[in-house]
Image (cartoon, rainbow, N blue to C red; front, side, top):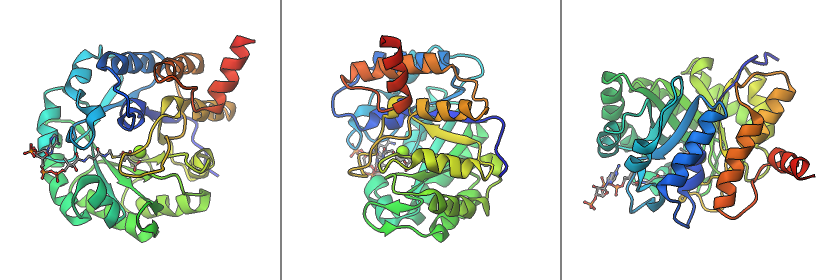
Length: 302
Ligand code: HMG
Ligand code: MG
């Protein structure tokens, strides 16, 4: 066991969390959520995605949201860019980091970004090159790293292949993503080990959806490997429109509660984080999908 003493959380709620919402969420609500997250101490926020508005209508206000944020020094604002068209649109809004998103499963690649894994790498290569030339940090997401809604179980070798391809085109950091939340601790460790063949431990993060209630366990299992960066979502929002049945990312509140309880520093104020999750949940007219938030809100009410 080599538990890290510090963990960096990237709140992906404004992007992964909201992309799947059917009801329109006004840009001002997204901007307020970003502001509340940065006030809570998040050092990176995944704000939006520059994808086709026909595919993901909820992210059509990407430029407006980016323009409306009052940036806080020391906070990194990241956006998804699947191709050069998305990258060129994103550049105008000055992201600190762009994310290209591929998959360890062929079927999911086709459904999500309308191309094969090989074609996706060809599309990402100029994006990564252009971003790095501009000094924008580059991250790659590897979806379906343990399981795919169309192909079932995904072997670690598939993750290794995509990690190698991403490394070859110059992607600086990769996220190992359990898109549909089917992973269990040992399976997720195997996927991480595959990614570690091509990336240093400091350049890999975990991105675990909580569909089967395994995400906190998967977080702990990979923390024990020394992984110290995770994507999480305030109020447990999230899901991918092209991964039917998948629910949100592990709630940022639950991960922060666990880490602080283990004496691991996140730099996050849990009370303020709960306010952020409550804000967006109230807007969406539902309760936060976080056990820690529920417990703390009940305590406040009592
Ligand atoms: P395509 O149809 O293959 O693209 O879509 P195309 O190049 O053939 O162009 C077709 C039309 O789309 C053209 O417009 C383009 O201009 C337009 P038309 O001439 O028909 O009017 N277009 C764009 N418009 C805006 N922004 C762009 C863009 N590119 C082309 N960037 C594409 C390919 C990737 C665009 C499409 O498949 C798409 O937008 N997919 C959305 C995928 C998505 O956002 N999924 C959710 C995010 S990923 C995720 O959630 C997983 C993650 O959380 C990790 C995990 O949990 O696994 C990251
Ligand atoms: Mg996701």
